[in-house]
Length: 431
Image (tube, rainbow, N blue to C red):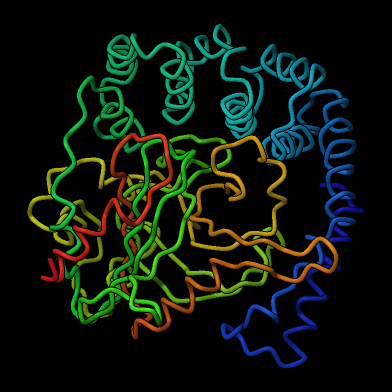
């Protein structure tokens, strides 16, 4: 990001801090108090121009050296967030691949992420070389997902390549989950009603986020109070909002900057971010296993164990779900080192994604994002599903609990309440 761009967004942040200083109570925002100066038409126009001219084109015009790797990685980020594709950008990516072995692992990962996001067909040979040569489980998994997306009929061959190149794959969290992804037959989904009836822990709020396997389509989130009843609106309907669990790159959840992993997250309260792309709307703080101590994850300072094991996670689940490997993705994502996945709003310009199925939602780097729309004139918040979500969560009565992400099926459409309403009612004995 250029210095001018950083200056503008730092200025936007100062405006927000002044708003707080003038009396807006922390975490108790009303819609009228939410502003995003960076979401006005003029600021978004400046951002787009600076992003393309400086962050992308200017950085990619530099010589690719060790000193300039960070500039190229900034360009990759800019290309992804704006879905920027051009002949010059494609040529630069090909130049980067020509010197792939001599680049740092961080650069290699960023390059693979960019081509996975933007060019799903153009780098078959280069990606195949990575899969054949890299010693990194993460880079290997990224390469195999690229190849398998192009040639799903060869997934058995890719599984054999995994087993041959990494004989101890089952002890490496990324490769363990990759191996399961490459199975010809996936496990059937256990009864959803069992998950909905399950208390998880006494006195906790439980949030359920239902998603598609294809994360291009937004999911649906509901909230269960500590008394086992779902939060409802003033009209008596079950409260729900749409949540996008798609990362911009659309990589699997156990890979850096991938989609929100399936599985159980621990709720760690509410906070306000200083990231201007997230905005000032309060967000829900989440952590995965391994990201924090067992005591913090389970909200229990007296928890005796100090070493994370899969069994700690398994015991949270109802019996019918304990052998269902996909629900362990959050466990293995945390074990692989993923961190800082939260549920937040967004000030990113949705027009970057006008042609995408999830529009006007905006993707992230792996977080759950709720729809927020802002006035192009003054940055006033017009619609905030995130604020409604936080208000509903607060109304549940406990700030401690768990959030569960579950993929229902592979339908190519957003999840709607009618798909789960019967299970929701059955879980409470109302059907």
